[in-house]
Amino acid sequence: MKYTKILLIGLISLSLYSCSDDDDSPQDESIFYWNQTKCADPWNTGENSTNEETEIAVKTYLENENISVQKLEFDTRSPLATDCESCGCGTGQRIIVDVEDSDISKMKELEFYQ
Image 1 (tube, helix red, strand yellow):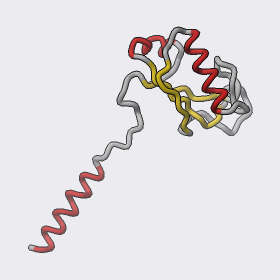
Image 2 (image 1 turned 120 degrees about the vertical axis):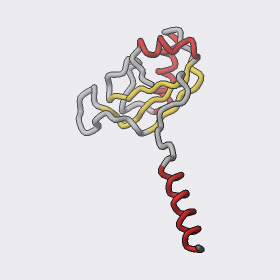
Image 3 (image 1 turned 45 degrees about the vertical axis):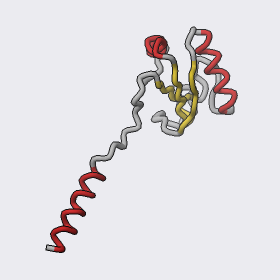
Image 4 (image 1 turned 120 degrees about the horizontal axis):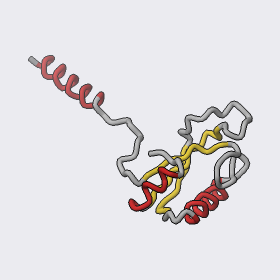
């Protein structure tokens, strides 16, 4: 009986762990992503630009498109290839932008993705 209880607790723990949500997709529809390229981004920054320079350039670009940036961050989850030297190749960084709900359709038009 003792082993049955331990086995049951172990199975329950394992099933709860296996059902955890590892999806990093946003729960908020106002969060968008851009895979940074070496030199093909519309705000003219790339692999030789600092994150601070890129942040200023992206915010300025979006403000010129009448989009209000609530928050801007970077991570290293870009799926673009980084082992090539073309302008369209990736830097390995992804730009994460949180905007007002009213700007969601504009972000999609600018080819940011959710």
